[in-house]
Length: 494
Length: 103
Image (cartoon, rainbow over all chains, first blue to last red; front, side, top):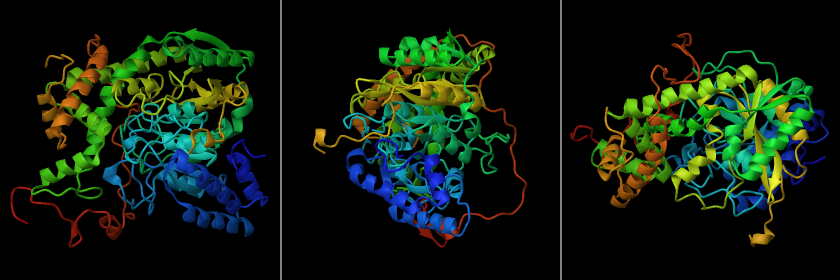
């Protein structure tokens, strides 16, 4: 059975049907492309749709099945990739004018992994420029619209990937999460979004924003599909020096073991700062876990509330260093000048948008002589306090839950004039990145017709219990609270 | 240690823009001064904390000199890489003069 609003069943079901020959990868791919053709004009989830390439891939999968070979666990499943994941031969922009038209000479490790698993890449999704933002409005190529309400943002920075799953374009997508950029758009679009343990998924070929925080993560309509995609992309990569070399058992196999005896902490500090509907969703999700046998208790972790401020010193500092490479010499935009320093400065001024310039300058400032220890050094010490707050809580709890986002999706344009208001969107997701932990956002309820996600947090490599709790929350969620949805084009005259 | 006032002057913006190689327009300087001041004002929440005896965390993993075996392997295709460069000459990246010397 197809998911509501999508021309295909979920990822696992699609792969099963393609592997068994019950359907073909081409049929699935054509259905996905047809749906994209219908709604993409109103949603703008993609910067590039690779339709022809996708059909070639789909035919190769079908040929493999016909020849008796197994194309892999994601055989014939359409997938969308955030446009900061390098794809050899396919433009990769990071949502920036400075990389417009750039064609990477190599594939990210995760891109190879999904291709090797038989997934069919249908396009590159829109994002806030260099993944800096919480609404996808910072893209140089225009905003993405939330499929639930086209006048609202999908969240960000992986807003295109979240919207692509929510609109039923694809059952799977990859994003990247530096301070909440997978989980927050997942919450705002009514889909599942995962930020894995730092180092679990290779960052090779992910265009760097803040290297000690960045992690690639999956989007899907269901917890089981998200786990299946994480199983495919997780694993050690010699090309990423921060890649963990740990044998991890597949998550998908133990999803349904339940939460009996699991110790769950409800982060009270987050509830106090969330909108009433987002806080209410968490309280009801806690009841669902309790009814399923978990031991649920509220816990205060005040140091987590320091995370946002520490993050807006650490992340810009790392970004200012990472983005120094865009100098107009080897790739990307060049604006000529009589000398090389002038060429660098003009190219960067013309190529970067306002948010990226803000963060580069903020990062440069906090790393500059006289301010380094007071700002950057202090932020690193506060990062330790955040990690200690978590460590203390995880002595008593196996997982923690809280809201993903303080609010539901906000109107396009509502926060663009006030950077600080935009930054507050990530209040509940940032601490996880500072600590290097995993977390997942699960669609749970609706507030005035807009989706509300509940976040499950776990200690490093705690994905097993985290996914089991997420699966129980998903089963207790309100009907109709998750995507895909049918975008309502007629109502807004699009 | 410099005094942290939470303000960000036009001169500060001009200074960091030069360090960061960003050629800003005058109206951008005014706008960024105001926005960066407001952001720094907010993060003052952490700059005032007593963190005596708290070690710094630079990275979530404790890593030390991760190296791979020093064995030859495939590299990126040179033509494919150079095809993406704004200017190329004789198989190399071409740039304007660096020290005021004519090319």
